[in-house]
Length: 428
Image (cartoon, rainbow, N blue to C red; front, side, top):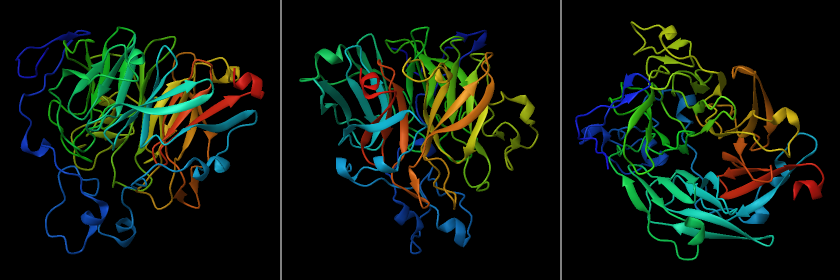
């Protein structure tokens, strides 16, 4: 295993990767979560904990009404889900795939058809097993901490927690008696702010993940605000890109094999700026996406932007809305949907919390030109916001082997299925 304490460097695409320090600074030490009520209590004397999303909130009545939105403590019952409020284009059907999947986040499908679902707030990984049309939800890993990132590769389930990455080999053969995950890398920071990971495997057979900024806006340490990659055994840590604030969705272009990812931008600059971004890595090891100097590709930060031009940094492919919380994204590679969807991106926008009028709470279709640049963005699945309140919050999307699309809703603890065509075609 490679450890951060080793003072060596790796060459990636002609550049030198950056290693983490073995001991995190005091500001990066893990602190217990603090509720919005505790954070906004007028009697509170202690300062907000490092990385609190309320740090920097303007001292105005309008801003004081804005705070992170906690999901209900328990998953919603199947008959209480907002399926009747969700809308998709003509010809599409939205139905329940599974309920009772607590804090459902990242979606992945195994070679044998099992759907795995991670959590950001709970300690478990769930598996949804289809037994002749009857789906069973079971726990395959527990006792984890912030296990948001998961990926399946050649039968192995990889799990990215707050500060470590582990694996379970041949997971679909062990669903009834899964072993404890084996840790393959453990030298990650323990910051709660933007500490949850997204995990994917690249065409180069390496694990890709991010270490987000430990703050809303700050000068990150050398180990933060970067995309990294590892060998599948946890060795060979390398820097892929820098200048990212937080990523909760990545995928690989089916033709160019370039890495695309969503990025959440800073808070408390304005209700309307900056917008979240869709980015792509075109120069591995060299791309810098601008954090904390520049936001949305064209707005210098009011504190850290001095002495810098936004033209120094890699430009976004597209802007995805102010504080819309663009999370999971996948290229649509199936054949069930119309041809216009093929090799285009479907993005889950979790929805804003620090805007008076909420935006997001939907799936959008981002269409690209043949060269991979932006063509257009249009609504796909809407209805998660009703009367400026959330009835659900989409967190991730995944293309199934049959071409249908699964959507996780961490607010309700549910997974939905979007299909196209006649019932016989859609359910094949």
